[in-house]
Image 1 (cartoon, rainbow, N blue to C red):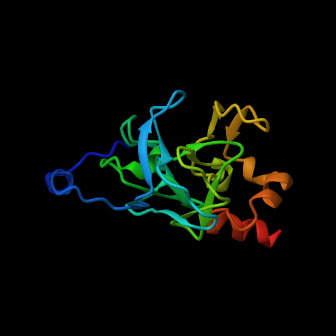
Image 2 (cartoon, rainbow, N blue to C red; image 1 turned 180 degrees about the vertical axis):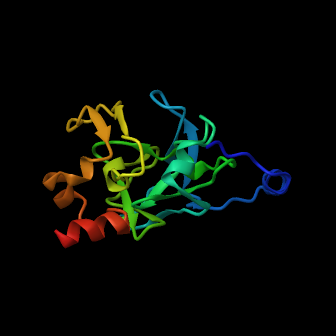
Length: 188
């Protein structure tokens, strides 16, 4: 199934862009910039304290199948928020779409839509998350796997939608997983 924009959606998106409106909030201490390994990333332009709010995500709720069928430039900008659902800005790219993966991240989740600093962050540092905190292999979704480019000392080499199952990562990120994943982990 391919999703097409109806005229009303096209007009809404055009008006949102015109008015510089967004679904999500990005801490004013952060900004999107070009990166070496990825298109863009989010960087701090000031010191950030541990637990400080970095972003609040909003947007459209799509099934994972619907998200997979978005045009190429948009189909991986969503964030999984439940076993079969993603939150995405859909056809309206926002700065919050540019948080990159790192196997040694400095940010994690509180609940489903709040991103916080897991430690103090220096000015100029890229804000990253470990995608293990948000991706889950649902029976209704394709396998998710890509070669990691983070180059951290603890790089796993590949990122998959089953990484959250690692006992090491579960201990490391306890309390920073997406709410639905933390709930699954806590039930085991």
